[in-house]
Amino acid sequence: MYDLLIRGAGLLQIDGAAASLLPGHDIAVRAGRIVAVAPAISPGLAAEVIDAAGMLAAPGLVNAHAHAAMGLFRGVAEDVPVDVWFNQRIWPMETNLTPEDIYWGTLLGIAEMIEAGVTSFADHYFAMDEVARAVDESGVRALLAWTVFSGPDEEHQLQDTLAFAAHWHGAAGGRIRTCLGPHSPYTCTPGFLSLVSSAARASGLGIHIHLSETAEQVSQSLAAHGKTPVALARDAGLFEVPALVAHAAHLTAEDIAVFADCGVAVAACPKTEMKLGVGVTPVVDLLGAGVAVGLGSDGAASNSSYDILEAARLIALLEKHSRRDAQVLPVGAALGLATAGGARCLGLGGAVGALQVGMQADIALLRLDAPHMQPAHDLPAALLYSAQPADVDTLIVAGRVLMRGRRLLTIDKGRVLREVSARAGRLTRRRAGEQVATYPEAS
Ligand SMILES: [Zn+2]
Image (cartoon, rainbow, N blue to C red; front, side, top):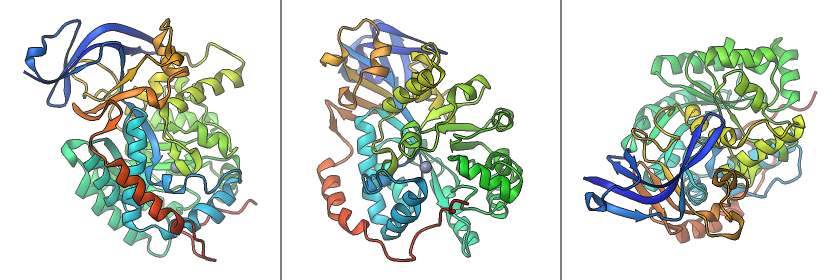
């Protein structure tokens, strides 16, 4: 018997840079995993059957760097430089957040991700018990890190985050995993980063950190410490555990070699990086060096959306544009960043990111009947360059259907929208001198 049978979809297959379609296949799911893929599996063997004839089945998308609750701040910091974004808008406003705000904000982000075909995300924020609760209830998969900064209470913060990580690691049937979340080298001292890396090693946890987002951050690190942020993080021991780095937009050849040597994974967030005008992750160079690369949304306060297909489209266009080369980052490679590449970033390589027997049943079913998806000469290309979140009809995580016919089955969307709306006004208040951290002034 199977728990779930998906019948008659075209299956997206990605093999390196090549993407292809396996037409008219069935996918059988048992105990959360894909256990059979074949042209015709008897529906009598399944407890639940989804007729997906005429649809495209894609591996669930992976958002490799997010702050899901920051949808609460969508649109409050447009067209400002990064120092103003942090010091005058976001970090003063984040002092208003209560744990319950973060719970509802995270559900808003998860609802948006489910509707956009995202099945897994790596989150980095505050009050992470509330984020974990939202992940548990909504049925998605996540790697969760509690953001910590240097400060008088840094050791206390670290103890709290270790308690969170221990409590939730492996929870929700294994859908939740945890790691440590030092914010960045510009908000954490080298000594604190060393403390975090020691704690990660001792606890068997990985880390998730922002590195080298702007050229200014790199030059300030060179002036203050005589090394790039990547070298500083390595010397603090952060790459001795599984490490996920967000942005890494400004890298030396040595930095890229460090990532490759240490097995560091990188989450590129092209929309945020473009909107803030800070420079974009050199994805093709990183892939060429053998580095695992995925795609992130970052928070919706900078990125405006949690649409990972959009991120894949943007990075493919950016690399082709900047290199004046239509052949770089072909369709399969770009879709691979959004699926198997992201899975590697989350430590889920080999378990998530492909529609194959033995993999977790994390699946997005997309309708193909919108004008922008027809005719179907090249469906992988249509998915990358033409598809919209609204084309996602059904979303499945670990064999459980979370959305069907675009109706969310685990989240009360009306309630989420009401809760967010009721909280939004209070969250934008700013009080002089109150902010969660300080972004270094330009030197
Ligand atoms: Zn971020």
